[in-house]
Length: 574
View 1: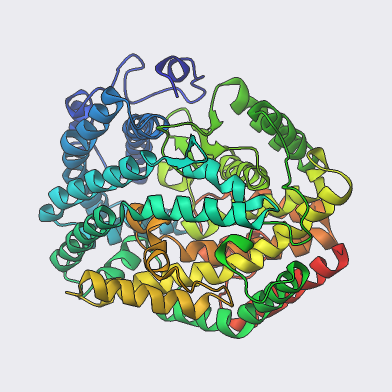
View 2: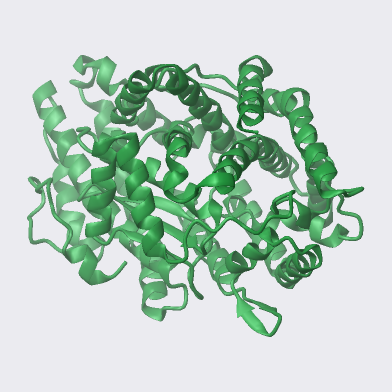
């Protein structure tokens, strides 16, 4: 995202508390307004609500500065100025904000008018403030700064990886296209080339993760927790489920999902005439047909997804078109760009930005539908009074995105027809089943990492292999043990946001319920979905799921009918 693009964005929510022409370059620019809040009147309900609106405004202004800096650091990891801005943010701005917000939280908590606030609306906000007060420690500020710098190091390492293959240089994302080719020998060579190139970074990535673990453990200890897992659960404000519930999900995967995965693997192995499935046999069409090619140019991806969004709901389509017109999409893959994809909201203008690495494969369509769901969530919740309510808990934020993949799936004839359309729809549903064990794998691995203090690198790698094999199904990694042992390093969430992964499982359960509702009554299901998105983070998880027409749960009883429905739908597709 360019500076010019940002400067041209419409400001539909004018500033009231902070001068319109104030440009925030550093903490000193906003300090006078924080001082006003710290000295502000919170004695009556009216005064407190005005104070909260002003707090939301300053939070949005400074939050957008940080978001812009982060976006620029990912669109070009080689840009020296972008990196300098990022490091300035994490070293000189973020550390100054945290103690100020702690004092503001104290002021809110001590307000005599707080008890008279409408608990139905402000209850979640109060709970969040109380949690932040309990967790805050001055000594953790420099540690959190260190973690931000270490996370940026991961992006630099992964963003700098290129693979030499058949005389050409590719990013790992572009190398993934070879996994769709019918030529098995080609797939194996490409898979090995990418995996072995990543393996060259294994020591750097092991060392980096080791540093992150030790810093995170110290943060938890400073806050009075026995381990970082328990600290992070509270920091994520997970009041509606526990690590024991995550264990129940893992057990449900073993009893309900893995049998379905193995049935899929058996069909694939039989169709391909193989004795064993290898890692390079999982993405290709089992009938040996050439890869699905939904588009050649990113412009076609934008155009096609716009049509899909309009087919789902005209207003959603118009919102996506607005993003295109405002330059809020960075979709193409290129050297030096950070890996992965995300949606990030520019807090002050209340507009979403989508980042991804499209290379012309089927998963690119799904990714844009997914990130589009996040973007529609940002649009829907933009009018919430409190800045903290303009985003939802991560478990429900992912319902917004995963449900949009499912709601958009009936309309992917914008990219395919004939056999390709059947293939795309079938593979999409099969992938949902295939990914459910991966969520358990990443979550269970992290639970082990952060509840076994003082473990060494080799112990950690052993724990990974044991966890990976528990949920792997029947894919043969013989002869690939060193690659298998470090496979987790490509999962950025482990470095970026520890324990942010079980959310995908919880959200997929919610999204599948939205999908089943839509099969029965599509207009009503979409109405419920839109209403739930508009609530943002103003309600607890069970209420958000209920508003979307679903039930919050992650056990075998909840999962079993959803997996059965997926298998039934796959069979009906043929």
